[in-house]
Length: 71
Image (cartoon, rainbow, N blue to C red; front, side, top):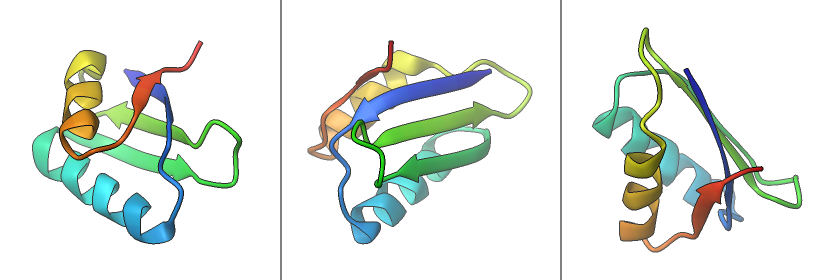
């Protein structure tokens, strides 16, 4: 139910833009981006369903960001 991703989101403005897009596209319970972390970690918590990681990655890539599943 939680997707954890490595991104290149680096500003508060980008963070807010990405979170708004994810909230609009998916049914989620929570979404955060830690821009202070070296991996710029994006966490997405699904609302009563698993997070479709490939769709999140595709959305961010369409928006011009790098996004991969964090190992």
